[in-house]
Image (cartoon, helix red, strand yellow):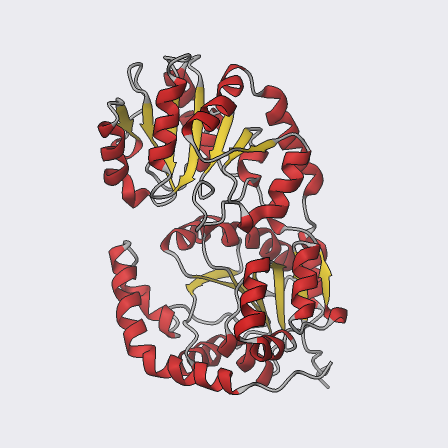
Length: 434
């Protein structure tokens, strides 16, 4: 299918990106440093590499944050296993995802912070890295980058692609010609679900180049757990009723702490492991705990839950596997307010947790629908009485629901090896050397 012409809106976007580049540079630099990023690496956001390009073919995979990064790792591992000459570059935008990449990327894979979508910045990025294939994950749609890759003959795949109904309506209402121009320039789209496929086709994607392959989130390796840390934690907790509230956001902790207080009427020894999505909010969350007259200890102080603690503030990075392994019940945050969209339930399912969530899970709707149907999860109204009513029976025994969650995620795992082969097939064929 011949790509649609780039409309005037695209050229307006490119001009605005050029004009706003100095403002973006200042704000992104401030944010990078404020969140504890390495000052020497902030230049990567502006296309200046801090690592050399490896020799040979290079696969570039872009993921945004933690969830997308975890999903991309099995794909990168599979692609490298298929081709011993291949190298991979993973780009992300957040400090947390960069730390995960540093810990979990395989050999022959490197990490850089993603370049912003400004023409001169992306040109600088491409001049250094010269990728043979580009991969965007989930809902990443950057007009300038998509158009530039197509113009330069670098095949682009969208993998684990997800487009919500509300996002599709926005494209259709405000930029239908731009959507058609962009989607028609993507060589391969592998969608998470049938709804995404239908919506992308309606916006201009070539039906011959799009198919449903499921979610790579189900193929991610289970989170790492330090056996000694787990033993120490479970010893400290003993037989107390326990639940974890994971990846919580501002406005959610208040609801969850009030839920915990309600639970204590019948379960006075209950313990809540509270793990905010952004651990740098620990002081703010601790104040909320204290304001409710709940006693607590804090993981960043090298503490374990004491016998009198009612809440354990899990304010560290890289230990979510520990919390899921210790707690039989997991509440997934980002789902109590209607402006976030929920978080991936696969990781607690892999650990055998019975899963609860609020109703706002648009970011992982297909996963929650399947997991709920399998009996491994439950969506609950975002009020403390409803949450407490759903939690109470699980504190007394969540083994069956947790087992169903684990069984579902094992049966639903996508096949990163097949996806990697599809992507590698996009590589331009090199003429054999004489």
